[in-house]
Picture: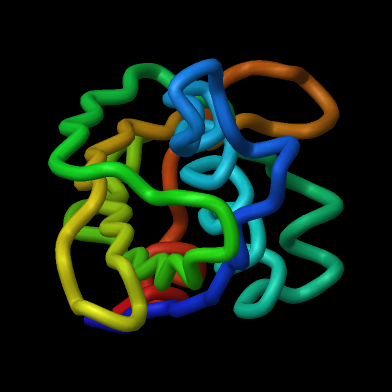
Amino acid sequence: MQIFEKIIVVKKDDLDDLNHVNNVRYVQWIQDVAKAHWELNTTTDVSDTYFWVVVSHFVEYKSSALLNDNVLLKTYVTKAEGVTSTRVVEMYNNSTGKLLVKAETVWCLMNATTKKPSRITPEIANIFK
């Protein structure tokens, strides 16, 4: 299983009224890191032909991130079959190693021309192995 990692530094705009990262921001990062992983590993032909949409998010908030924290995002695909793919995203405080968030998202592969679900090809399934 291929793991993609990215570090984000928490900015003031990421914070909520309690001065920790807003839950909505975590969801945005879940989507952003998935997109970055896809764009890094796919060809232009594939990315022009297909796109992904979220079917569901399951997010567990374990601990808070604060202003200027370095957050390590790790993502990997656990399943890709039919028209859906399951992706896990874990976020850690990069200094302490403490788990902040764990999420599992089901994505549906869509055909860019028809805007309808498309079966995941072996080429796409193998991108993340």
